Length: 116
Image (cartoon, rainbow, N blue to C red; front, top):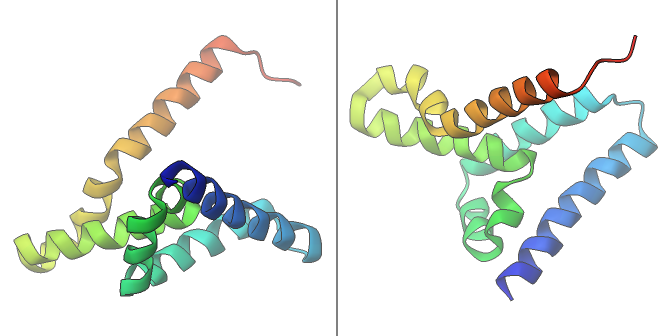
């Protein structure tokens, strides 16, 4: 059931993003920012944490999950380090995802030729 709910919740987020792209004049970059900011705002509420517990990767892998990870990392770092955690917590929490994106982007750039 965990896989089913992850698929349903993650798919619903993707459908919402596609609807925004189809029915508004927003660009993909706008939708990306909207979803990350919405995830960060929702990360400050207890209901998104409950959704993460219930849907697992369906709530943490899509873009709102990145905003949620940033907020949770900042909260944890502030609790441990004080005000300095505001500057370091988000990057520390999301470092694995950022590193993977950079490395996979580099690998794709080395393997494939760009179109002119």
